[in-house]
Image (tube, rainbow, N blue to C red; front, side):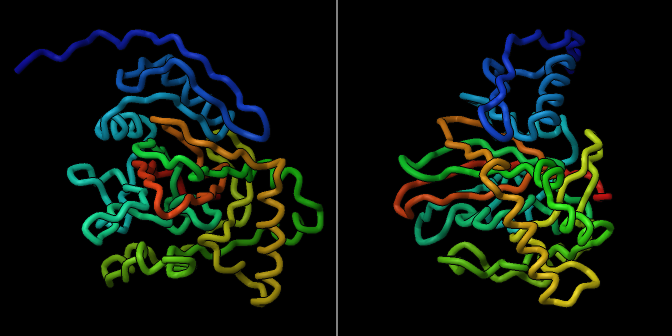
Length: 294
């Protein structure tokens, strides 16, 4: 058996460049096909906490290298739609509109509503990484909204209305809604439904690493606010959603070849803008488990 190398990975020369606008940063010059030393990893981790979404440009990495990098941040979560997991790499969800031999190769309508990944779990996602494999010639953007800023700028009356309240999150809240949903949303088995029972989380959560508060509701997975009449709950949620995605809170990511985008699901919600059906789009997603919201 060969001896394990005790030599630390070499330092890499890279730049963290804030993006213009509301949120996000580019990381330029970092090669994720190579292991990161502790100092470089700490820099990346800090950028992720500070900017909430980081874009690694031109990453020529394998699925296993994406998995290995993702695992530096925590345990990986396996998506309930196992038919869309990458063969041999169940940690990767295929996000794609491609149909081959009459069957979709991935989840084609992922992100059609604003959401935080896996907020419907007892332990929602810390963050997600999405690596571009095939990109359309038009469309396909992903939008990110900063829910720390949304909370910081929330009008006083709305703050008081939600303070101390909880909301219910459900994977099936809007599962079958939307154009072509039947093509991409197979009927869930009893076993799958058991993996996505509803959960209750605070409407305003505290980030476990940066200590900041953020709204933690989304149109994709939040069904209602506990303890309010249905119409009052819906009206309050609609106001929170509208405020959350004001233009000054949003970064629109226009994908470039081989981008790897890593966002913080404790700080942001995101939305897939969509692209023409005939243009091929395929990305690989890994999802990192987080903590119980508080």
